[in-house]
Length: 321
Image: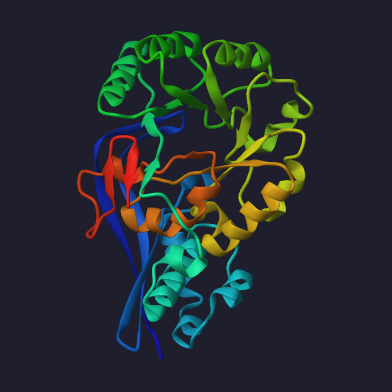
């Protein structure tokens, strides 16, 4: 018989995280803790209001399956009990953790995956004035970051990007608009990004209004984030996107994420591996996908004033294993 605990945590950030949808000063996560035959395992998720989630709604979802969890629910059975999303991710991650702890191996060893000792991760430059964003980019570059993710809304796009590129002429830049742009003027904006050497544009249009990307000729890859949650989304992405951003809180855990990665690659999509604001627990659960991703954006824990213990070891722009 398993024991199950479900609880929420709040992790203050060291500085505000500002994107097109607003500003956050803390990471709020929900944790599932399992104990079976003396072995303890945990899984974490970040409920996301953009997807209609809250701490309360996610905890309520998880509570509906606690009896099955206590009776030995498997990862495979879980997939049909909860939909893709944060709640299923917390449970799926805890079940993977339990599985590997029982076997006495790491998650990568269990899956037969070899990861490098050092992984490059994007470091996020949040929205501010052009001068603030340029200063932030320059500081990150000086500390060692070589891949920068630039958050934008629908204002001052050229001013902000020119300022950042001038500050870090050699950095690899990816741009995330978080659904804040419109079809009108998109071609000119994409050309601006290409002219500034931006490597990829993430989710420029709202997920429910991205038909303007259909057979839209653009000079740099466009990545689906909010438009891609699980394998069922792939059929609508062909002809609009070249890349998808996989996040466990969208797929509902590593089980579906691995299947999504396999199917997406078979259909010709490149992969990005992303995260929400979270602790190292959530990043550890996603690491098996890192070797398949062109870009990894795993800096969520680096925004925390204090990380969970034991924490993964981050330096600016790098995750050390």
